[in-house]
Length: 495
Image (cartoon, rainbow, N blue to C red; front, side, top):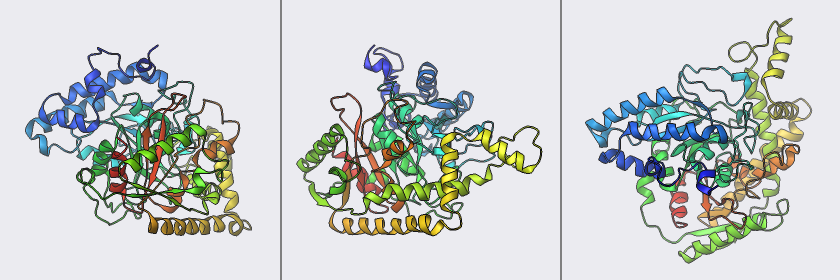
């Protein structure tokens, strides 16, 4: 079986080969020029989903009729005035299933929301619709975004298009696998501790976690409210910039949304910049963090840094001395916030309700027992414990102080360099079932990504050539707050 077939990509000579091979930017340009039509593009992707979704498990819900109607409307807008039709007019996009969509089932991959039909759109979905995007459906994830492999979905796991015996990463595994397998040219994910970047790395696509507050969280089903951020998963950084042009900006419905004006991401991407200073944390590339990265990952990162140096960048050694405490702090803060956020799922207002409860307490207990999976229950219990009387100071308060210490580490590092570079994950994609029996080993998949969420800085996963294993590899770039354009510009140097 050829690699293209195995990855879900169309075989040579397939009638839709051209459409499915185009990036989002290329699709936009062809739609505007009339070289292809919005309805033709929509049908090509719906057919690809029909052919491959059962094997890969990327989508939980496919909105065929809704997508066709959106494509028809986009075609009308494009026929009237292509350049006023919207930045994404006719471009299909997949949406992670923890982002609410009006009238379209949204489950967060949990049985407790199995039949939830939201009465409103998330702000990012409203922005996509205004830009003329065609929303194909809702992608699979770890339940409530709690996981690093998309094996915690209450419905079925997602498989990596490059090797179906391996995970696509998580929690945005459905979105990353859909883009990698050409079931969508672009997708939305959410990132609480690496959930955009790690699956993008495992699937060989680009994934951007914006600065906290750069993109509205209104309508994102909350996991860790001080950590969550929505961002794009795309084939390349030009597509990421195009999506950010649509998604970024202040939203009065989100109290944490930044009032800083959003830049022209696509325009800034084309500008030449002076050579960059790129810092490599010695704690990340040595054996300081749980033994350091896998040799294949380490070599790929070193080769990428050598390439950046050949492009005129200056590579410097920097220190993030408190990185070793980041994973512990994250797995106190995130479960604590999850414990609070998930209290609302009680069987009273919406979602699952246990049948024939004896009393209110019985309804609460059986609804949450039946509705939540094991990993969600584990994090609720952990979060409730660290917030309980007698333990909040010993655990949660210390984790909160660790966040401030990590932020100071980054402030000092960014006084020396423009960007920080290193691995996204310690290994390439691991096998399905390999880490499910050991939660701590699964948590360590996020060891290089959680610092960006704890500090709120933007970070980008950039695909690199596969190593000896043939699996996708990636470089992580991090920048000061609101410097997403710098991340995207530097990623272009990698080709």
